[in-house]
Image (cartoon, rainbow, N blue to C red):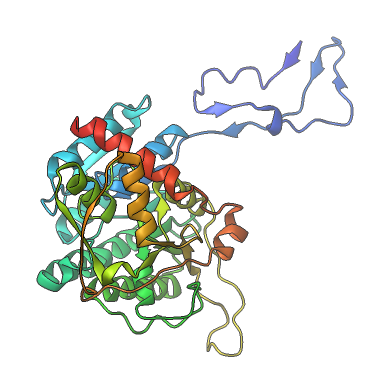
Amino acid sequence: MLYLAHSVGFIPSLLISLTALRLNSTFKKKPSSSLILDITIVSTEARTILVTGAAGFIGSYVSERLLSRGDRVIGLDNLNDYYDPSLKQARLDRVAAHPNAQAFTCVKASLEDRGAMERLFTQHHFDGVVHLAAQAGVRYSLSHPHTYIDSNITGFLNILEGVRSQIRPGAPRAHLVYASSSSVYGGNTQLPFSEDQDVDRPVSLYAATKKANELMGHTYSHLFGIPATGLRFFTVYGPWGRPDMAAFKFVKAILAGETIEVYNHGQMQRDFTYVDDIVEGVVRVLDQPPIAEPAGSDFAFEQTAPHRVLNIGNHHPEPLTEFIAAIEDALGMTAKRQLMPMQPGDVPATYAETEKLKALTGFAPYTPLRTGIQRFVDWYRGYYKV
């Protein structure tokens, strides 16, 4: 018989796996002729991950993905009315139907509520933080600027302070993965957009808040050793998407026989990135926290901050006209178009360089536009019964 440290059945969070076995070159025999197998027992106790914006488009997917791999998820969302709260609730209902939903807890609170955020970080200890909650939308920032400062600046500060409050000497520090945006590239004309490019000229307040997040994240990483990664998302689309995004607006209008507004007279390109690819990238990055490294001669300190920014896009920009054509084909309908000038805060093209993401994680988004659009249209028809 094999002696496995007597028994481990009384410790449900422990797993003996073949990969965990450290075998001696030969078995050791006891006088009784029993064999003793020298093993290592691996703890599979679930990590606890905070996901902000858990009722949001990307956040609900990330929550499900983390539950699927056995993590505990604390989801934070305020379910505001920037768009239909019932869609947000439906996303949460989907998470609640997950087979591992017992490991999911949703906390309703706003990022900018300092007291609520302090209570959250006091009541729960997090092994990782995926910060996706924010006031989104370029055009909305023109009419509601204070909302962006409250959520994206004050709210992000509260997240940083929460992570800082959980630092303990000698203990691992939670990796903070936070959503930045391709909008930070502003009016850059050098394509594809690379993480090393100058992003000091934003063309919308939304973009400015995301750039500010990157600066704040770097600062806290430098001061407190918090490993942090900012992900610059490129035009995410797919089932359960946001109603203010182009795919949603176009499908809704075409099905209703209404005219769609085509900005910059259709002379635009976007690096449309399917939501499943975004989620894959987020989770893989979460598992690869940055570390401080020796600094070069251009930095006054011995080490760099454990902070980085990464693009996460499809690396394949599509003309807006092709995007519309893909929707028309998926619907089997033709859009009525009204050509419009470029809108304030918009940019003519986005295109992600993704080599750094691929080098770190072994993954880069790949879903073809027409595949993703068909999935979105199928979901839309099913959800809205049209």
